[in-house]
Length: 126
Image 1 (tube, rainbow, N blue to C red):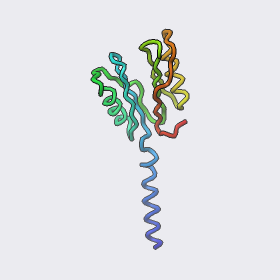
Image 2: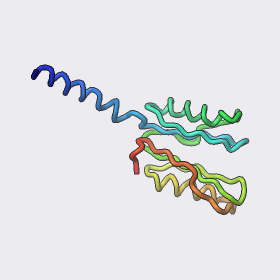
Image 3: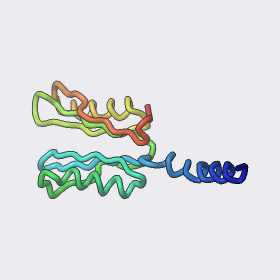
Image 4: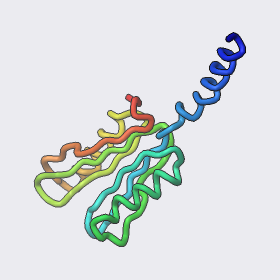
């Protein structure tokens, strides 16, 4: 029985790094022609970027580009109500990414900017 418990503990320890890093990367892609945006979380930066590009292109946009990608960060999207203006921000916290997105949205005089999406990886990042 003791040997069995040792094996369970070892298996749990081996599983911890995979669980700790699962979804620890985030990416956002953006189309300048359609203003379509795609967000994604994944185990690696390249997988998150690929997923974000796929999400961005779902509406037919052919010019999607990665705006931000990385580990342990948040990305946010703000859109304006006054006109077709938007801002994408990234930061080490939810608030930092939202502040940057709001500032970029308001550039050029756009009014009524508000946060539409925020993705953080890991998801418990504040």
